[in-house]
Image (cartoon, rainbow, N blue to C red):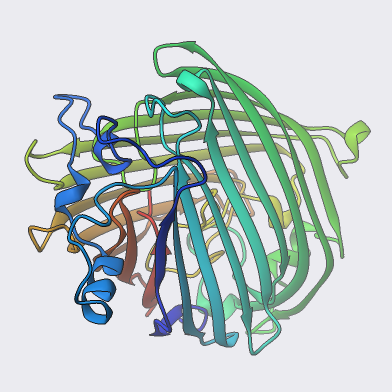
Amino acid sequence: MKTCKYLLCIIAVLSFSRAFCQQVPLTTAPLQQTSVNRSNGAPVDSSKQKDIIDVIEKIFDKSISPTKRQLPGKANFSVIPYGGYTLSTGFTVDITGNVGFFTSTSHQQNLSIIAADLGYDSKIQKLFRTRSEIWGSDNHYKFVSDLRYEIYPTDTYGLGTLTTLAKDNDIDYRYVRLYETVLRKIGSNYYAGVGYNFDYHYDITATGDADRSVSDFIKYGQPTSSRSSGINFDFLYDSRRNPLNPLGGAFASVIYRNNFIFLGSDANWQQLQFDFRKYIRLSPNSNNVLALWSMAAFTSGYAPYLDLPATGGDMYNNSGRGYAIGRFRGKDELYLEGEYRFGITRNGLLGAVIFANGESFSGLQNNGFAGVAPAAGTGMRIKLNKHSNSNICIDYGVGTGGSHGFFVNLGEVF
């Protein structure tokens, strides 16, 4: 499939820990130690683990003390510059990073993360994305942010799961996203909140379907620009301690978004989103985890074409491994994925996964679901930062219709 990303090479890896305040004392658990299995409360001792920076330090500084990196600082950064290739956009250079930290010295709340991605390729696709999930003291508040600016030539194939590659329609647009949400604790691991969502697509152009038929993009009535501006109401359950690499717990999110013309939206439309995840640690003495993920989205009113649910449309653009982002699209979506994560080396440096997923979208002619697009694959895990438990994830997925390719992520896919 011509829009699948293929990994060319990892140019360099940089992972480091810095203390913005006094180093954590020996009596305080390191970041990784607080990633516990809630069923038994047993922490993972990061001082006994190895990551890439340990390997690099051992190679280039043989006199290094083995206890130098046993304790993390207040914030732990992980950065990957890498090169890749997309058949539709050419060579790409990307730098992806995240920082994991606690917002108090007690380390009793969940791990907060800020992630950023800056990319450029040989066919003028440029993007900047920053996403964050920040927990307040004692987990009383959660602040969620998703900010983006993209110049994004890509492909769309129409609406529904039964679309074919013959409906490939080259599309180009610029995109601004501004999502901000604040949630307040209302019970043990339960939260409710409100936020603002803004999507602005402009300078939209499309070449038309490859088979020269009238595209769903035209039939749907997409103009050269679109604005969606609305209020979202969130209900959340989250018992994970570390969203970068959950070893146990569960996540359940229900979001109702209502867009209004008086807020600047082109039309009044609504969307209801569900996101459920469960992490089952198979042994208290290992990091082997069975992870399950399901999503659903239902749209009413006239939502802009590019704001409809689509493959890779989740917050971190990770759903539907085996297909390119945007391969399937529709007013309504159903999604299910399972992944088994297991270690290869006892020191935690290397691991692997096997996964399978399926997605279904409603078509243009009716609101019913028709067909399922399955995909499956496997991948490697390389420990980038043992204190935040952040992995480099390199997966190879295969879907239907000849779709296949590598997918690279910093932190677990879900």
